[in-house]
Image (cartoon, rainbow, N blue to C red; front, side, top):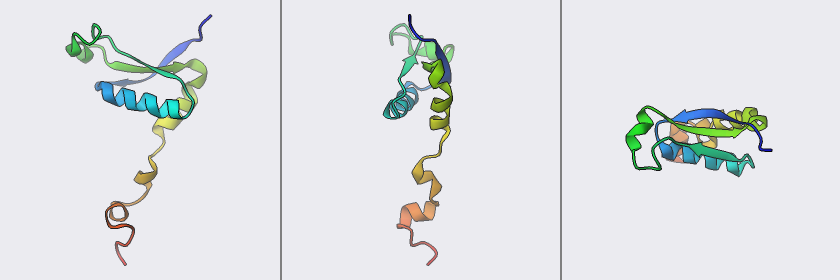
Length: 89
């Protein structure tokens, strides 16, 4: 019998959902992107039914933690990012 799935995020943009799925899969958490757009023939349906990201119920907490974690580059200041860490010296 299959495992229970839970939706952990909703997206308006399918690409954002696909990137989030890739991040989770890089952390060995299987995920699926669910969309109700008639197989891509009615993309306007996403306004009524957002693109959803689902994982196994047992993976929900770690998946949310991973998606909520800041990117490593976000921890550095903008000056460090653009000037190679020499700003203010």
